[in-house]
Image 1 (cartoon, rainbow, N blue to C red):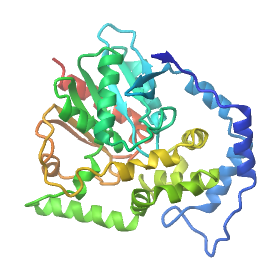
Image 2 (cartoon, rainbow, N blue to C red; image 1 turned 135 degrees about the vertical axis):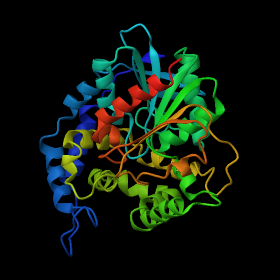
Image 3 (cartoon, rainbow, N blue to C red; image 1 turned 90 degrees about the vertical axis):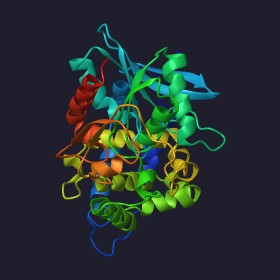
Length: 373
């Protein structure tokens, strides 16, 4: 376990700016809005800000204000943020991000805990192949990542029991941890039902559940094409995105907009610096391809009968503009046998930890109280 600080060289920053400056823009046949497609007018405005006003070194200094480390687990270098509370209880919470974001998704939440609840230790890793963690040479799935994260919590950091919160790919990993290490996972808190369950082998659905699945299928046809591409041709797509920062920005921004309330301007949901910091990390670390590989490598469970169910105490905190919306509780009960809390937020979407972090903070605190010894 070694201390870690981010340092992006001035040459890399200059290289990024040069590529933004020399972007070859498309000719639009008709003005587009985020409702239907990429809003190129906004993308040009943001790119101009990225080139002329965005200060990576200022953001880098902010990121380095959090205590970060790396460690080797199964021969992979794993990067993680580790902020120990100054209180006496040291309740560990592992926060697991998903795709299109990275570990920075949880920084607002970390700041809230540091200010409001000093009894908590916060661990926020970068998944293998994301941000500052190493990319494995061979395929890796959520079950393998679950093993790595469990070893991080127990063998590296020395916790016997811990809480897990996750969303998107993080909910895949969190569910696997709860199933594989139920003696260690004190509570599992998720912002969504792991998505492979939505396309799984589900029998005897109620009408409410069928309506929910139909909404998911409609979403897949209208807004889910990105997942089909990333799950079938990630290398082909990545050749373009790894070469063009504006192309990378367009791809990621579309998802940040689509996975929230699309009727609102994107900068009413996120500030432009946090959007660009996330995109810049993908750019500087060249992890767009390695991160998208999870869509081809983690296919276990899709279309298969449910064999194992999660029995550890589980809480859900759903956001109305997430990909799947708010599911029927009966559907969640098919996979989780010990649901102890269920919250339906009024605002926010897939990146609720960025859009509406205070609601997630309150829900996690309540969940820990519900599951305390």
